[in-house]
Image 1 (tube, rainbow, N blue to C red):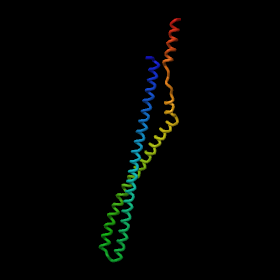
Image 2: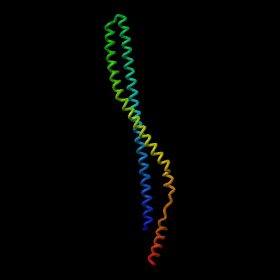
Image 3: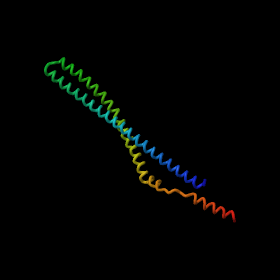
Image 4: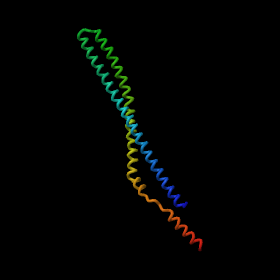
Length: 163
């Protein structure tokens, strides 16, 4: 087998291998991006649920205060005490929810930043592929005819040997 044919097969093999690696990387990047987006959406949903629960607890506490004031105006001190006790429970619940929110907000912000960085990496990867037109260049690459080159080299060798 001629040296030129071996080189031709080696080049083609390396190009094919590289194309497969690039496609695998692109698939992995897209899958990671999809999973990460889902994680960010879940974190944002959790944040929204916590915020609604916090607002509801605050609203309940405020309503209980107003009800306790009304009970006092009606000279119903035992009911007012009971309402204020329940208000403390809602206030405590609101504080706990607020603390959870305060811990979750920086995490969500960080996840959003990381998602943006991952999306930038994907966009950069796609832009590099597009600018290089690698697919078209590789497909358009003609088969190299090393057999002809080998024949010419053999002819030159034989001429040199005759001299």
